[in-house]
Length: 111
Image 1 (cartoon, one colour):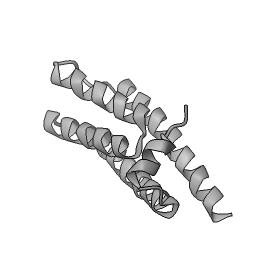
Image 2 (image 1 turned 60 degrees about the vertical axis):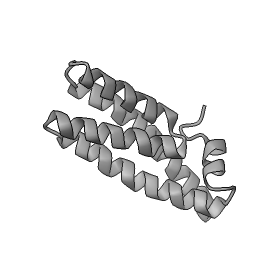
Image 3 (image 1 turned 30 degrees about the vertical axis):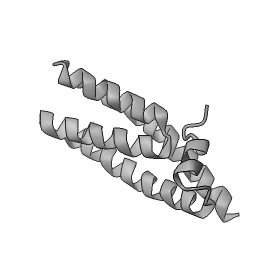
Image 4 (image 1 turned 120 degrees about the horizontal axis):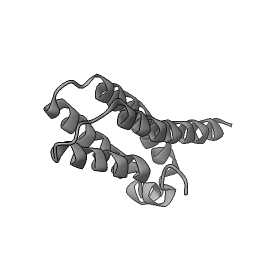
């Protein structure tokens, strides 16, 4: 399974390939920023807000692994479990996979 569901993305962008690439570029910047915010979040409210934002942004482009993990982490901290650095690093690995995939998509488009 690809890190981004390209069928979902195509539906979201009404089949406009140029728009798909622009959305992926924007998501790449957004997810990088949100993940950085997550690493620096100190309060419960900050953590839940950033995780919720990651979940929504990832779901919009079809980055299901990121969306699912962010949702699970959001549910965990809402149920009282602490968010560990290891868990944040797990999300970082999945985010990295998506960002690498987007990088390859954008590079292939430029050729």
